[in-house]
Length: 271
Image 1 (cartoon, one colour):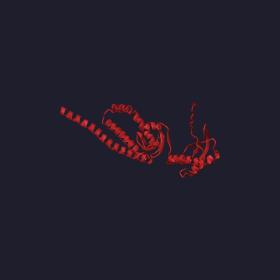
Image 2 (tube, rainbow, N blue to C red):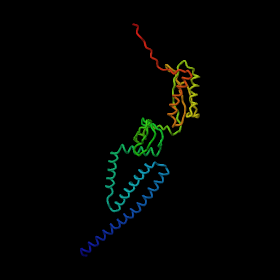
Image 3 (spheres, rainbow, N blue to C red):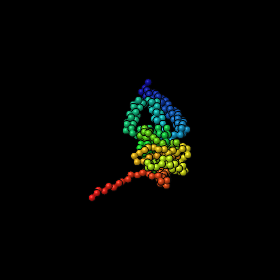
């Protein structure tokens, strides 16, 4: 057998070997791409039925898409005879480095995912968290934005938000307004309670159920303090707070009931 024939057979063997691998890789790519498409479609349906936030859906779909494609590429390289062990090790090392560099951001991302899944609040809710109070303006992957009571924007990282206490004032639909008013010790307790209760019942924003209450709270140094507890719809909280405070002052004055206040007595030295 001459040298030319040996070389020809060698190339034929190589072409056959790698041709089969290339054809196999093409088939794997086509089938893998079809499977990825089906998985992504099914995942989107599940997320839509579970009412996932749109921003969370997009992020998770992109993450799933790229993860599946990377897995498919590694499989193709293995089919073509490329060592995948070192390739996977490089990806793992790169992932670890990125994870360490973005540790805080990843914590905020995880917090955002938890918030969007468990939904402790929704856009428009009045919440108190991380020492701030405001209405939820926007829920993003890494942060949540609130509009404070003085119309300031408050941005809270989702990591801290998901790990801390959250008070949602909107969930139940109603709130109790806690007010305290003091009157002089000479005032008639029964009459004072009647005046305070009349103020509550005359305010249209105060709910009949739960029933408002007026009770003696404490006997302080200079006044008898009454706990006044009306209920209202969550959106009427501050309106009720301010209206009741103003109306109580006017009604107590009209009834001749004294609201005590500190007095200063001037002492003059005898010349």
